[in-house]
Length: 121
Length: 108
Image (cartoon, rainbow over all chains, first blue to last red):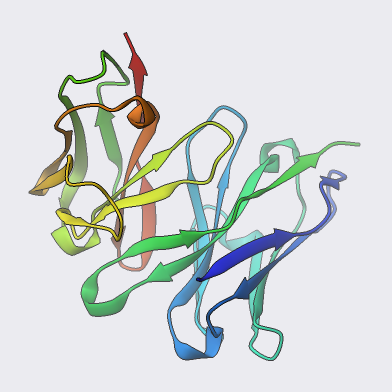
């Protein structure tokens, strides 16, 4: 079955760049779907960060747009997220997910387990 | 940006009871863009319903989504012990996703 796994440093210093990768197994990114990132600060709700297509076409949360870059590597079947100039407010569990926009339906049907990122000096 | 509000914030119910969760949008949204998720502590969200009323694969039929326009509802007909969790609604408009703040369903 389709599985997603986030990886990356669990700790980042303020003002640095956070980099995460999501590896996909059981499905080829080249076959379709969008691939997205969602985060959840401690004790809070879900925040959509953005999503990317196999072609590299991206959609970002307007509130994070200036600090976000997503990329996709179809040869490794993975996609990545970079967040620049991080602050304590970026501390969260970061999830990657498969994003469906097929037939006008918009939802995230497969999620990774999440990775905790703490921003602290 | 479309804002989603969910009510109530918390629902205290007993197993076997019916749960009715509300999701209201700040402006009309397409039903095809409305989804519901369940999240248990320490776990990733799980898709329950998409297209406002279509159950995702493997979701029991005690979960029913309904609604249109600005008002949507998730109903759990008879709560099972494993249903006590946080529930989020989500919409997508103009390729921008937003989530509601969540409703906690906990055991009374």
